[in-house]
Amino acid sequence: LVDIIRYHSRRSLLWRCVSAFQFADVLSATNPVTLLSIPLRDILFWEREGKLKRRTESASLLPILKLTLDSDGISKVERLPGPPTFTGECRTSSAFIVQHEASMSKVMAHLKDGRLRLDVPAGEPAPQIWNTPAPPAADQLWAYPADPDLCRAFYAVAMDSIRGITFFFSEGTLRAIHIHTSHQSCAMDTFERTFSGRRRWSMIWVYLPIEKCDRVVVLGIREGSHAWEQSILVRTERIGDVIVGQQANDTGKDYCLAASAPPIGDAAYASCAPLRDVLSALVFSDQSAGFCRGILFHYRNGGSRAVGQCRLHVDPVESVVLPVQLCFRGYSHPSRIDRSTIQVVQVKFKQRLDLTME
Image (cartoon, rainbow, N blue to C red; front, side, top):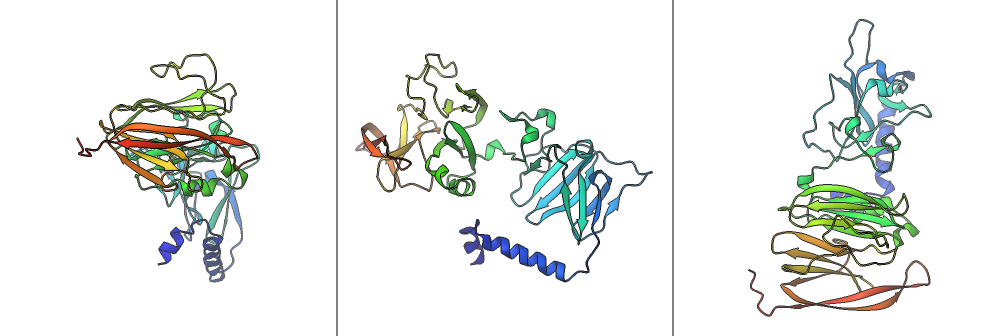
């Protein structure tokens, strides 16, 4: 019962209070220890509530520092002979810092009451925190458009385990990404954790379905007319090229697709999908007004493609099997952001009378 309550209230401050009370109990049961501050590079091994092993003049140090983190902070500091090889292992309950000691030569470690925290001097790059114990080497990491040294947290994802990606856009900029590891996973947790207030109303959800039989072969970035405007380029084996993000209203050709899209407004998040060989479709509707938010197409070859905002497990969904005709009606609807109106669409499918699946 407690696990169910916690699952539905993961962002509640109550659980932080529980951790704080547990930490207070630990401190009250131990004798106070004087604060010890030493350079992080001088640590051979340390584990929470354990003893500290420091370097000596005669000891030859292993060059790679590995720090393990959990919900209570740093739990272990150890050394490795070289960078570990990535094997696809990704964690959800712990995080890791794995870097050469030279990159953290000015970082101080403060130890007290069985705990350890880091002190990074102003102007020094913060350690990179990963969800894998074997992150890629720094020279293999290419971050766009930011300098990797300015980033704090990095996530590795095993592409063969992805069943879809939800991209969150606002004002032409990609704000967040949610990875779907199953068709039952929901992006609402990422949405609620990352955004608040007015930003939520301006957020555009763009869903990229990836079927188990399909595989992503190319990922890319396309710049817009401004540096902060980017589109995501995706190519899969079965579906081909997909552009996720705003479409620029210019006369240039799109060399990533078979043909250029027609000119549209600068503020539009355009997406397209073929209507040939559609096996079924899911129509996502606005819960209060009923207009169509997005459509998820499933094809006979096993691939899928999404248009509009397909907010899985968030909006009402209508399933259509073997559609043969698509009808739509556009109309104006009051905006939830300001006093203007937006153009929305109502969508209906006509199905085959013979619903025998081929």
